[in-house]
Amino acid sequence: MKKFQFRLEQVLQQRIKREEAALLEQARAEQECDRCQRELAASERKLEEALQAATAFVRPDEQMQSLIYREHLQQVIARQRRLLQRSQEILQLRQAATMKARQERMVLEKLKEKKFREYQELEMYLEQREIDELAALRFGRG
Image 1 (tube, rainbow, N blue to C red):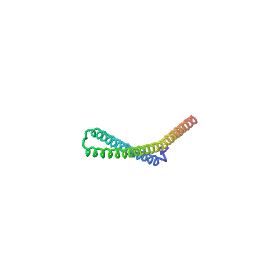
Image 2 (image 1 turned 45 degrees about the horizontal axis):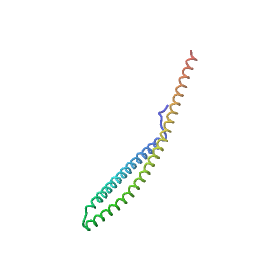
Image 3 (image 1 turned 60 degrees about the horizontal axis):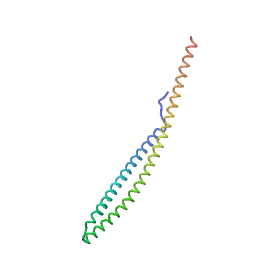
Image 4 (image 1 turned 90 degrees about the vertical axis):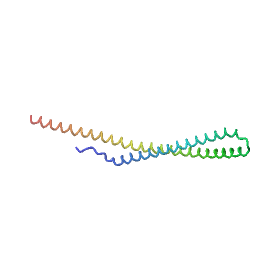
């Protein structure tokens, strides 16, 4: 009997590549999300430091500069929070795409396993039939 060959092997390989690409995109999205979180935390620390330093300013021009700087930091923080939220949404989309790609691959892998089991069963059946025929021939001669 010929060697087992899964007819959808090329499709399975394509699905494996699609899953790998989805995992790579998910990893990039996770990195972007982490970067946004780090930048936001750094800006929040700067704002906290600016708030603490503001109490030391006595002259009006220093107080005005401090106020302008703090307002700028608050705007930066608001923008970074929006970016973080968007990067988290993108990450969720990438995770969903990865999960879908994994499920598609697993469906084909299960089908391949089923077909292989069927192939093995057929092979065992044919082998047993051949053994039975040989035994019948020997018995008939004997």
